[in-house]
Length: 108
Image (cartoon, rainbow, N blue to C red; front, side, top):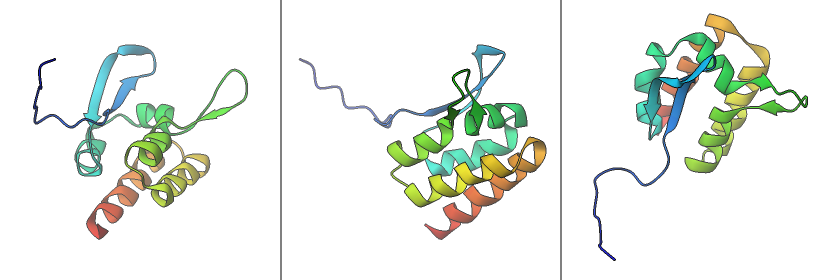
């Protein structure tokens, strides 16, 4: 077996997709820093979809919250973001998420 040393991070990235056309990708982040960099360019409806949506079985999905919790290992940040998804929507949600991520990133 060949030992492939790559500069690419080993953790899976978070991918913002178009909810209406999943093959269309708006952005991708491997870290909190990259997330902070791309969020201003992600459409608010993609952020809504990945942050808080009610599925057909009435469960709530938060792909971004799960990625932050289990891939980045940031439980408190995930809790804050998931709560923001429950209490904000549209452009207000996008602005609040950018504020939270920027603030948290600057604290690290």
